[in-house]
Image (cartoon, rainbow, N blue to C red):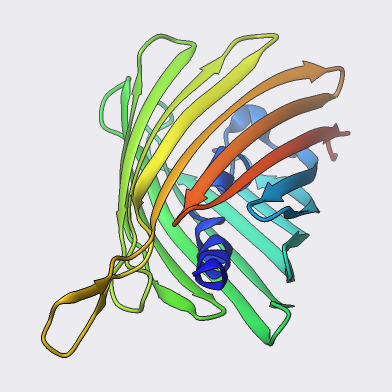
Length: 273
């Protein structure tokens, strides 16, 4: 069961806790962001049930190539218990539509490989989606995500809604339901984001089945699938030409508990041209 839970952590790590940081769509492009160049650096450490843990880090360049297009590229390394993996990260977004009512297409890919102690594995994740405004305060997100990580594989479509409670406070909820493969995921996420001139904060919870139940030949449940319970919170602050974000995350997958602390720094490079 522990090995099964660690394998689930490999796949679910990109579905849940990283929602708090790197796995969000690229920042929407706009006239004010034209030629903006950013370097995003992050480091993390974690503990895992049984006395083991891990850590990792990433470095990503993000830049606006036009007033409506943003691209990003970088690398990420992670280790948890006996598993470790390295991936290349690629992302992009494109804005279109009227200036006061733009929609954003975005895509991302994580390609690499790793080792879980007993065998090597391929790590592949690709996602694409659209984010658009229904009203000045209400936005909708549609996303499709393909996951092939070790023994976990399948598609994970998601739908989300975001509502601007105030100019500084954004509330969002999303639901992801896997199709095909063996993910068996039905994940609900509720999140709050606060953004002010000198301070930002976020908090949220994620819950739902993380893998399918096991049945015998008579159709009776032999073993229920593991469920994910997660909570995360973070605080951010700009300092000069940098933006700092500290996020704490707690996961429980089938009794295997993981606590992760991530520190990310966005460095705003000198604008080109």
